[in-house]
Image (cartoon, rainbow, N blue to C red; front, top):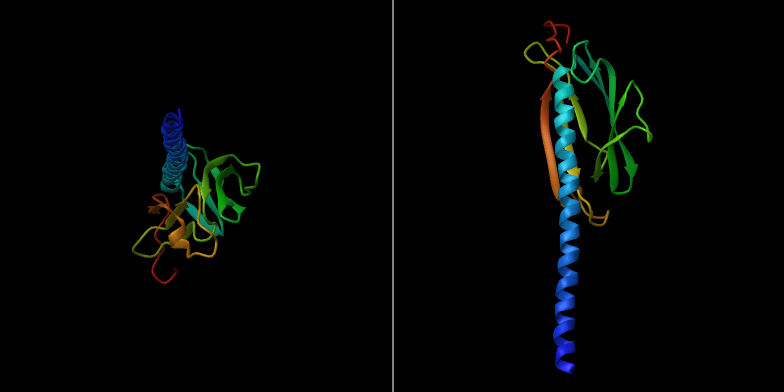
Length: 168
């Protein structure tokens, strides 16, 4: 009977450990999938936008008439604190905690968006950098060691215009 108890306790430990690993994997996959879908949505809107303004950590896009996601002003913002932030999208110039959540478990609100203005040789561009982690490490570690999953992209505003030489 004692041997059976030892064997069963071993199996129980393995079962509990594998269940915890499965839950962690499912949560990480969900957070990464949300980030990929969010990047796809932002890509669609930035490509259609005619102007982008950064008011860190908010990104304000101006969408002309005819864009598939609407027209007018759209704001993307990163809200949260500590090591858990959410990416939100709102129609209009303001974004707050009541705006719909597009992605969760971002590890920072700093440097998520960067706007590169147009020049005589190039259109305006928005750089996106999502760092995602369901269980971030302690805040004392460098930022690059915290994010287990990172998505970066440079998105061109196809409807922006190049500025004339001397006016940039």
